[in-house]
Amino acid sequence: MPKRRVHVVAAAIYNGDERVFLSRRPSYVDQGGLWEFPGGKLHPHETGLEALKRELNEELGIHVKRAQPLIRVHHEYTDKHILLDVWGVRDFEGEPYGREGQVVRWVPVAELGRYNFPAANLPIIKAVALPHAYMITADQADETRFETDLAAALERHRPKLVRLRDTALDAEAYAARAERAVDICRRAGAQLMLGHRGSDVEAMVALVERLDAGGLHLGSDQLGVLERRPLEGSRWLGASVHDAAGLAQAERLDCDFAVLSPVRATGSHPDAQPLGWHGLQQMIEHVRLPVFALGGLGLEDIDHARGVGAQGVAAISAFER
Ligand SMILES: Nc1nc2c([nH]c(=O)n2[C@H]2C[C@H](O)[C@@H](COP(=O)(O)OP(=O)(O)OP(=O)(O)O)O2)c(=O)[nH]1
Ligand SMILES: [Mg+2]
Image 1: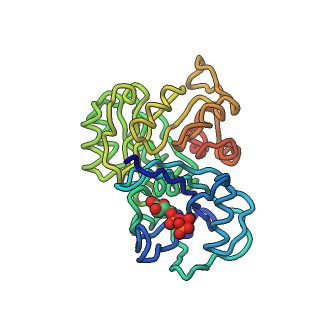
Image 2: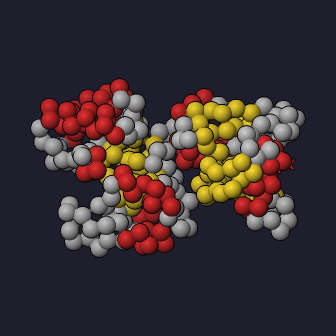
Image 3: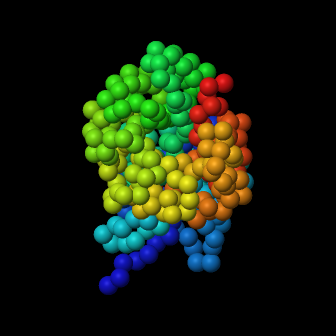
């Protein structure tokens, strides 16, 4: 017998950027006792947004005014195929409470990892926890200067996620710099992503694990040759992409996010044809993966990037200012 297909809408309801609202499923229902993003199944003839508004009113007593698509997750449970259609909700009326008697709680995004969710939820938790700014380190041959600049940028802009970009360093020098940079980032409350084009991916995965770094960032050439996700699910896997094929490959590999460039023309890549905001929007419209916009952008562009469906902005020079 074919499995039942179930379409579920659910909401990440935010209080600022720091907390999201969770409910605990009653013990007697499917996936009982686990925490969830509030929501439920579509009724016949309802759109996703209509169902979301109805469910959040029934379950939490709030009126949703606006919602943004966040992520769609397909998951095979033993008895059914589920599509979880998750929306970000920031604009609503009323104070959410457990209207059906369920246990509810505002949870700091950084603590989501401590809660037990249904198996389908891991990509959702990652999408919720992913910040809106992704800092990329600049080329700097001098080690002392590199460390001072990194500490200064962390202090000034407070990014939560940083990529240690490979510069002219060889594998050994990269690993040595990574070890210190992971530590500098950790003390500033940021996670560091590693990735070195001159090293093979297994060596990079081993380095990420040895240093307990935030994750692995793949270059577009590395992305192209991999057949499966090279890294455990609890760490971030990011990838640089420049076109629709790259985005599709990043999705296939179960990347947690992609960085798409160039949106604007930049001095560092003068020959590349910029996508523009419109090109970016079209390219990510049907992609289920969070995508950072990169190329000539600053932190002041984050809201615009989010407005066209991107996760936010990745940048090098914006963090040097
Ligand atoms: N709401 C929600 N459901 C989830 C999450 N993760 C996950 O696997 N699910 C599954 C559990 C259920 O099988 C299904 C949601 O159905 P539900 O029981 O909440 O549906 P509903 O609110 O419409 O309730 P009912 O009318 O069927 O009683 O999706 C999640 O984060 N939120
Ligand atoms: Mg429900």
